[in-house]
Length: 389
Image 1 (cartoon, rainbow, N blue to C red):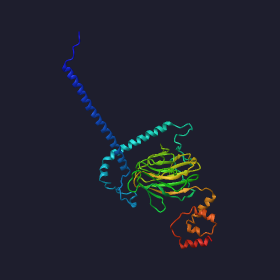
Image 2: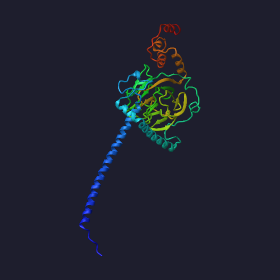
Image 3: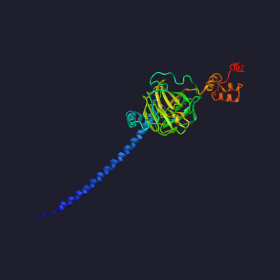
Image 4: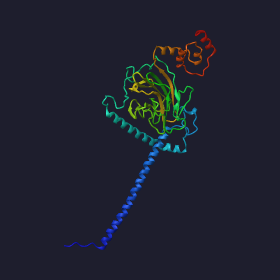
């Protein structure tokens, strides 16, 4: 039985269906394009919002964007009413969003740490991070146990932060350059400063007192070479981002070579804290102390570093403050010990110049003299003339 040919109406329906399909395809295609554009816009907007939220987080409790003064840099007892009209509206809507941003970042960080721990030690038996931590302290005790203060039998070490080797977002207050303020007005990135002390081949201990403003993406303490960066226009763990730095962040993570690993508990926010660092250039180790408690050896192999190493601190948070509260060093030899005793009594260049000593001895003593603006009293001059001549 022969097939019946299609009717003209069927042809019309077929053409209409194709046309309708074409129209529908165009409609659906336009919808897909619109959805794609909306998704791209949403992703871009989300990225911008995250950057804005991070900026707000780094500048929390800041009284104003401009016009900040050095007198207002320390911790305050009262909260400002608002940062600005735009920022206040963003802050009111960002409390939960900021938490999600940081939780995502911490989740990614924990994933990277888990991957690092799963890798296990390398062929040499050491961890892939060449500076490994240990629960043992330099004196043989375990981390967390009570120990005497490091280098208690050493002498005071006279160094400060280097005003010529710092980020422009770092201010130094006192005349001795030992108190540092980060981002005095508004934070837009990460700022750091290097110390004047060269650490190689010696044993040094220094303490850094933090104000109650402990927060943000990263506040770091450690050491680095001259190649370690001191400023970047983003919120990051700057000290230890490459192989030129070794640092501990306030989140309890050690950083070196761009790799992080767990070391201690996260610091409590908005609570004053004291951090101690013990560098042993002979053993090649760096050990941290928190509020006079040893946290264990953090980095090893530092005696193999041939470039000069310096103390470094950095911060992403606005108006954070760090004070170099104590600096001590071990004696190199008996001559060094004798000089330390002499300098306790002859502690200014003016007093030293009055001594009738050979040039080389006077020059050796001058290396340990602190330049001071304090004048010598007539009574001190009389005692010098009476007992030293």
